[in-house]
Amino acid sequence: MKLREEEIKEQICDIGRRMYQRNMVAANDGNISVRLGEHEILCTPTGVSKGFMTPEYICKIDETGKILEANGNFRPSSETKMHLKVYERRPDVKAVVHAHPMFATAFAICGIELTAPIMPEAVVNLGPVPIAPYATPSTEEVPNSIEGFLADHQAILLANHGALAWGKDLMTAYYKLESLEFYAELLYRTCQLGGARELNQEQLEKLYEVKRKLGL
Ligand code: 13P
Image 1 (cartoon, rainbow, N blue to C red):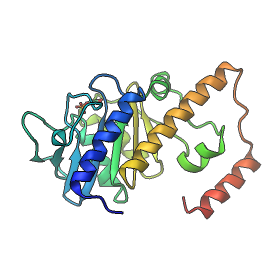
Image 2 (image 1 turned 60 degrees about the horizontal axis):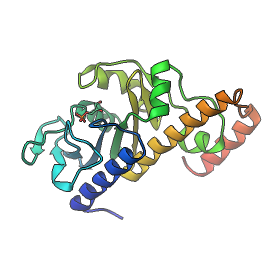
Image 3 (image 1 turned 45 degrees about the vertical axis):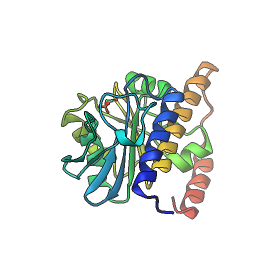
């Protein structure tokens, strides 16, 4: 079902509230964007809590970052360059979310990738989550640092910063973020319990087969 622009703005606000309520962002952290068409992208404004947005907060930019619409003092997120890089490299992607979920960000700060195969869902639906090198937020360093990870992954960690996920629509992108955080917390907790028993090669091959059949 194709949502109208106003419905997408509402959905961006809903997802912002959900990220805030689930401790994936503190204060004014995080940002969300949705691609409407080749030359139009909706994005959250900079410097506001993403937990308390209403549709008039949402800005519109083009694929170069030029502002097309921004109400009052709202200006597009300081991380739009990062979002635009995902859209540039992945024509199939229609939404991008960035947050600082507690467990995922802890892994990003410690330099530990989320690649251990510990549960079927993480292998089939998410796949390995690598860490893009550290880059100064809001600068051109960020899109450069993520570029090499976009083709083959569904989500990444940003070193010493947070997490980034994308998908064919906003719900898909958000669910990747939620799955990534769940996976990071599981890794942390199983480590406290003495270390996870990883899936073996044979179990993994069967999961790859499931993944192929599902067309993922
Ligand atoms: P914005 O409010 O500019 O989107 O920045 C939030 C953030 O998390 C930067 O990484």
